[in-house]
Image (cartoon, rainbow, N blue to C red; front, side, top):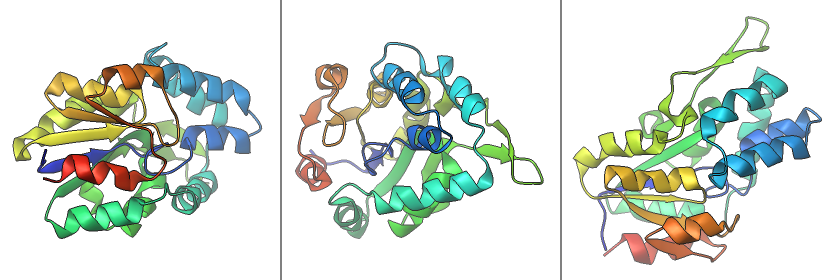
Length: 213
């Protein structure tokens, strides 16, 4: 199959980490945060039930977000750079759609050649001293069904595929998107069951044969 618009999740898809969990570890919270993230990604609880809770526990400041941005880049999944280069060379419209924090994801997107307008994620706000203030509470991506909202708008540009590791990525099917489950970092049974195609390989290059004619 061939698609005009190719959308990727970020955490455990483009990068081997779950950003919010890494922030939790850095704040000394560790396993308790990971359990909340896993519950949301496996569809056990709605995303909005844990989103604000995790951030209120961590209270990430600007320095933490800059640290996470570097980690996203350092922990890229194998093949990511080659995949983006191949898609952009063919004139495909490539987007990142993530429930992660936008300022932490933007530097990774920049290294991959994407404009900021093609990064859809949740903003975070700081006080003047750089301490955590709040997050973009009305962002659809901080709620269940958010990826269907975003992909639904992007489908006006042509046939669309959503690639990701979590149940939230599979929500794009509600907007008529084709879905590819990526299990190279996190293998989730619920995603295996919902995805139109499931890829277990650890290298993201495996997706190219499914998105390019």
